[in-house]
Length: 438
Image (cartoon, rainbow, N blue to C red):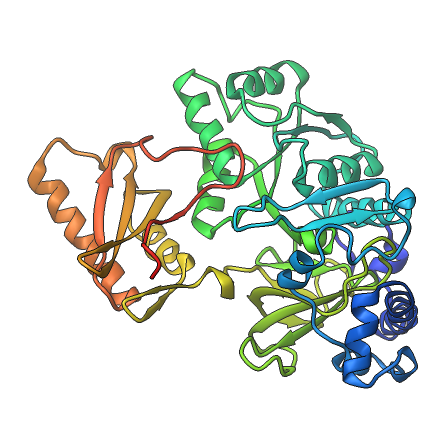
């Protein structure tokens, strides 16, 4: 049974056997393209003793070398380009907060494929050409703004390219233009809620009906709060700069904890994050992606560092493409504090389960007398904040106890008033590592 909207139904509902045929045909062409045109890949193939002719089945993708962020930084900016620079019509890049940014180029063909993938995920949420879409991402090197803009336009939506910041202006646009879809980070959507409520904006009566959120993880707690306060359907999608940007996966209305992978453009694998060895379908491991028809910057077996599970079981929405669990943990997000491995998602899981805690927090790491210390700034909701020192101290001890049980170390917890943790129009900065590296 098919439910909801489709952008390219002939491929989105294709039989599994046909999807695999498409993948193999594209994989063999893409491997030859990378080998013939990118010296880095040709050298790696030589080291492994393989040629494109060795790729005869989908499982042969395991013979290929992995690619990761280090490769992109070592070949910065154009070392992985497979076409003349005159054929590259756009560049996008990561923020580059840890050194050289990750740079990716696109040909006209690449942009068309990207827009198709985004149009699919937008249609999955029930958005149609009748919708008016308000963009609250910035139009810079970040892939989110341009990627979602052109994907929505390809679906036929009216775009309102408002850009990031100036929250009161965004509220005015919703009111005046009767926009029905908001694109932003989930944390900025919550900030819009706060500003709107302070100004008396009636979210329940607004024209908005769907949120397309990305740029940062949207925890189940954040999703519930946005839906309750904005009175909209809150959806998110999956993508990363290195493999085009948004459009790798999208959330249908039948399986809202998972995201359909555009399998005719992305060949997925799940591997052991330590050994790199393949894991069976349904096992949790690191997602590895191979772009199947990328011209400008081919990407073979890119290690995302994202942990997830993938299933090819039928979906009630009628789509036949595999579904991945929404990513909550990245292996490179791991913090080591006094020999204990900690992930920010663990902190989120604890805090969202405590009544009275807002979905805003900050993890601060520093050294005290040579010993690592973790401080967690926890923002309270207005109805949980109290003038009573005893009440707040009791609540703080409760939060500490809950975090200790999960993290296996005792953090310092500081409760802060509503609105005290800085809001961001882009990706929220959840971790501040001030430790002196030896």
